[in-house]
Length: 111
Length: 113
Image 1: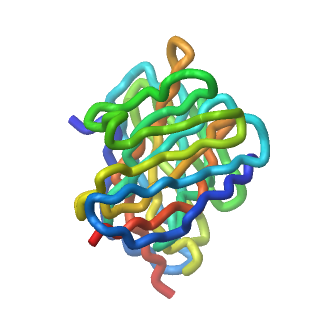
Image 2: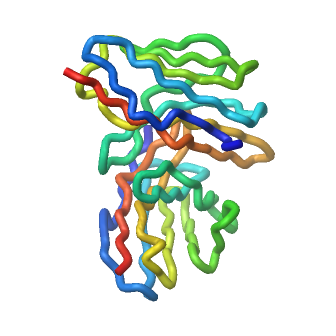
């Protein structure tokens, strides 16, 4: 299965600022997925990123808040923009082949 | 109705016993089903996938799928303390070139030595 390198692993950010999370995959994949996991809760899909096209966002998530780039088949970024304390969460990228592999996650705290 | 439902637990099982985890899903068009294990502070790890009705065994783990009842289960035999984790059920739907994996809220399992 694919190996994903995700960074940063954690960050503490001031409200109103933005953070960009990067995921690098060791093989080419068509789709990359971005999830959020709020404290004590399960995973919620933010968006699906396909190379060469606009990301597809789930209900409740918008591009202005969570812009995504997918410049090639092995890399993607998610930006959390204009952060507020409610954005404090773990953000995970994932790729799916026969099963889905997750990056190690980014633990974001907004103060 | 939630798309994927699990009993949140906690579920406590004595070491060596069988742990039984259950999951129901609402979308009849769902095609693939997964069980993930998540240790505290770690990302989810895939432990089982199942695509057709019946049982699938892998070591101490058995996944069971009943599409008519929209029900997926995971059995862990000879439970070990290292099995203590949150178990997430996930359901995948693919159509028109898109796919989406939807997770349940997870069941917290504790194996008691």
